[in-house]
Every structure is written in C-alpha cells, then in structure tokens.
Amino acid sequence: MQLTRIALAIVPSNRDGIHGATERRRVEPSCICYDVAMCWRSVVVAAGVAAAGCVRGNPAGIGPDASPPPVLHTISITLAGDGYGVVEIGEVGDLGVDVSTTCSSSCSVEVEDGSSMALVYHTPDEFTGWSVACVPITNELAPAVTADVCGLGAVGADVSVTATFAKDEQEVTAVLPSVPSDVGTFLADGDLVVAGEAEANGSGGGVVSRISAQGATVWTLPLNVGTIVSVRAADSIYVLGASAVEQISLAGDPIWTVPLSVGQLDVNTPSALAITPAGDAVIGTNPGPEVLSQVDGSVVWSRTVGSWGELAVDSAGHVAMLGSNGVSRFDASGNALASWPAPVDPCGYVASIAFDSQDGLYLYCDGNVTHYDATGSPATFSAPHQQAEGYPTVAVLAAVGLDDHVLAITDDFSALVIMGDSAWGAQVESLSPAGASDWTVNKPGVTSRDLRFGGVSPFDAVHPTDVACTASGLCAVFGRWLGGPTPYWIELFQQ
Picture 1 (spheres, rainbow, N blue to C red):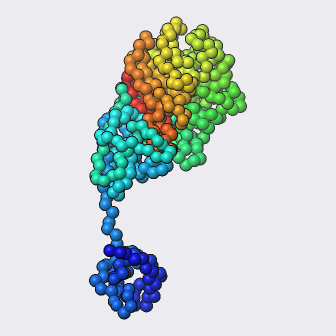
Picture 2 (picture 1 turned 120 degrees about the vertical axis):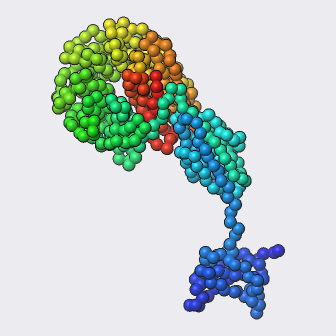
Picture 3 (picture 1 turned 30 degrees about the vertical axis):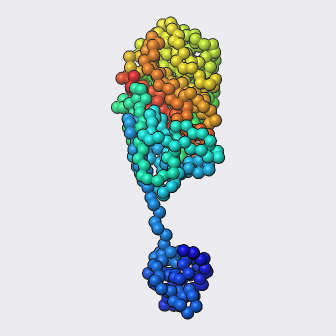
C-alpha cells in the first residue's frame, strides 16, 4: 500500500482537550486518528468525507501512530571461579565499546534486536576464559582485538555468557577497600592499617584508615603530613609523610604530629619508617636515620650515613640503613656498629631491606636478593626478576614472613606505559632463607585491551607500592588497580 506524508494543522477549541500545532505524520490517505489524553478526534482527510475505521494512535500524546514495541533480548552474565573480576557490557561503535553496564557480580541487561554488543573483562587476578565463541570486532580505529574483548555480534536472541576468574597461586583473597591503601601494615588482631592520597574529591590530602582483612572500614582519619610515604604499627600507629610524621592510637585518635623541619636533619626526602621494640619511630631521612620518641616526637638521636634509603630495625633495636657506603648499622642508642657491604655498588634507589627473626637481614637490590646472617656474612641469590622489554625496574619491596621466608616484589615500569605491551607489571616471589624459590606469581602489566581507546591498551594493571607479612606467613601486597572499578587494591597471599 502506498503511504503519503501530509501536514495537518489542528486548531483546538477549549473542549477539545488537545494541545499542539502542526504535526507531520505518515498515514494512509483514507484514515488518521489522534489520541491525546485518551480524547479521540476524527480528522477529515478528503473533501467532505470523514475518516472511517480509524486506528488508535499514540496514547502518550500527539505524535505518530504507535510503532510496535522493540524486540528485546537479554544478555546474562555469570561471574564464576574463585578469583575477582568484573565484566563490562557495551555496544560496539566507531569509537570503540560504549560501556553501559558493569557487572561486579552476575547480572543481566536487555538490548534491542540487532544491537552489536561486546564484553570486556577486568581483573587483578587470572582470567581463564569466556563460555562462548567470541566474534572478532573491527572498526575504523581498532582493526584487531585480543581475546580480552568478546564480541557478541548482532544480538538476535537471548545470550548467556560465563566469565571465569581464578585466584593467583597462594592467593587468599583480593580486597578492594573504599579508602586509600597505597601503603599498609598488619595489626596484631589481623586488621590492616592503610594510608594514601585521597584523590576521589580531586583535592588530595592524606588519609589513614583501619580496615578488616575483608576490606570493611573500621575508622578513617584525615592527615596533614604531605604526600604519604609509609605507615607502620605496633602499640600505636605512625604515618610518615613528606612534611611531617604523626602518631595515632589504634582507635584512630591523633596523639602528636611533628613537622620535619627546624632542629632535625635535612628531611626534604623522607624515605622509610620503622618502629623500635621500645615503640619509638625511626624515619629514614637525607642523609641518615632519625629516631623520634613515642612520647612526644622529640628527637632521640640522628646519624649521617652519606645518603638516604630504606631502613629496618631488628629485635634488639639495632637500626640498619642502606646508604652510599653499603648497609650502615647502629645500636639502640645510636652508636655505630660494623657496616655491611652492599652486593652491588652503588645499590641505587631501587632497594628494600627487612630483618628476619634471627636478626639476619634481607637486602633486595637491583634484581638480586642478598641474605646476611646476624654476623653480616652474605650469600647472594640469583635474580628473582627479569626486566620486561628492557624497561627499568622502578620499585622493589620485601617483607619477612613464615619461617623467615621473604616475599620479594618487583614492579616493572612497562606496566605503567599505556602504549606498552608488557610481559608483566609485577612479580611476586616467595624465597626460602637459602634462596630457593617457593613460588612465583607474575602480575600482568595489562590485563585487558579494550576498544574504548581506539584499540590502545588502557591502564588495567596492578601497581604494588607496599608489602607486609605476619609471622604466620600471611602477606598483604598493597597498591593500585589501574583501570579497575576502584583504584585501591590489596592482595593477600599465604606463604
């Protein structure tokens, strides 16, 4: 049947209950009806002839006759496995995947018939696969897509997809706290104290929080200590920032704050924090260690080691600090002890040190772990990390846990390069006191390559920034999940 487009001008009277002006409609020549607020009005479409057999129009108001409702199909997403991950659902367009729904648990969405849809996964753990055969996606900006993006094609029926995520080896759980957790440590009862920069409101500023091992926030306290460097806890909590150090009770109450300024060493670059057996704070400064009284933050003693770097305190209160002359050591009163040579000279900024339960010292420097016994006799282990694609390592972390096994972590710069194709973003390895590898976990530098940026890999990598272990071997790796639904990430491993 031939259809004709005509223009109708309606001039309503007060009793018509019709409001509007000229309306263009696609109609059959023999009939047209309007339905406005359920008020019917016949319209003459031929001279002297009233319309007959009218079809009901759009009950929502003046407009074209009601079209058949769109055909909808359901995309059902099931998240399976013991790991953590999310799946994004979106329509494929010229500029990539227009994400409309993020499923952090199993969910479903309705889409119109024929919509070209795709799924994208994100995980700090392991992705083991989709349950369906994915359709390759191509568009002007992204001619090729990896398996991380699953194209569903033009959806013509209900679709059910399972995405499976697995824990890393030795992983207990992944925690996504709602508070900043760039640095952290354990409390005696198993809770965690975390601190970092509060960036959600765009104004920055440090925040320290106590959270459960499941990520539930117990309390949060804003800080005014500058950029957060470290947090450590014993009978109280110390937070070191770029401009001050603050002591806080385990209940979250401020005790004192000491600016790093007049009367102390040059502390423009504080680097590390530890706690003595007596409860005093030891901060790493340029150019040496400084001990602050737990009572009021006054300086107990300070020393110069010729450079600045990481430090650690043993069970007797001896302080070891890595400097330009190797590992400088001091007793609890600040008297110099025999220094221990670094295996690499100079060791450089990329270093971490930690004492074991026998007062031996682990030194992680330039890809090598050295284990000194209590007399300073070293045994160099083989390098636990090979740099990916020639990029330099930018951070190493070490903490001692079960039976003096050390958890050594290397973060690779290649994980932070958006255009890079990194082999991994970090390596987590547990080593025995003799240097044997217990297990190794490689954390991908980019775990999802989607089309939202024209096929370029977005930030979706874990970036470790701190580590802590308990004597029972429960270790927490703190940092960021770049590209995840929350920027804060903690992964718990059991040695």
